[in-house]
Length: 144
Picture 1 (spheres, rainbow, N blue to C red):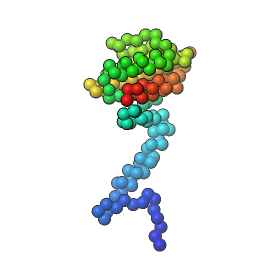
Picture 2: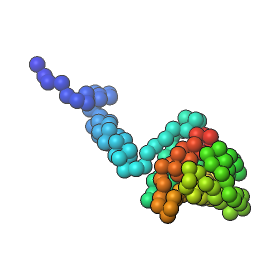
Picture 3: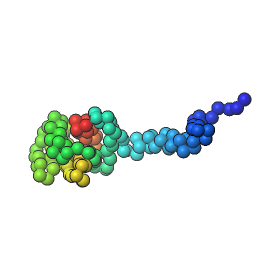
Picture 4: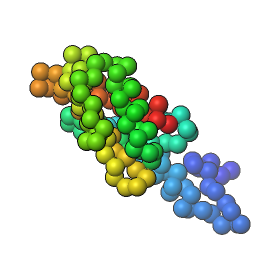
C-alpha cells in the first residue's frame, strides 16, 4: 500500500503540477511571515485587500481612491478619535491630539490614482505606534 503524501499531488491532464505545489508551500510560508514582520494585511469594506507599513514612528498606507475623499475621511476620523489642532487641505496635513499623543496625518498624491496616507504619533518625544495604527485602520475601513 502506498503512503499518502501532503499536500496531495495535483494532476491536470495526466501530469503532476509541481508549480501548484510550490505555490501552495510559498503561500503557506509567506502569510505568517507578513504578520511577523510588522506588515499586517487588513481587509477593506469593499472586499479588496490592502496593507499598511509599520515604521519606527509612523504607519503608511497607499489607497486607490480620490485624494479629496481620502482627505475628508482622514479629517473626520481624526476628529472622532481626538481633537484637531490644525488641518491644511492644500498641504494635506492634519495635526491633532489623540490619547495625549501628538498626531500628524499627511495625505499625498503618488500617482493620478494612488494616494499615500502617513500617520505619525508621539507622546513625550516617544513614538506611540499603537495610536497611529488604530487611526490608520479606522481610516482604511471608512475609505473602503
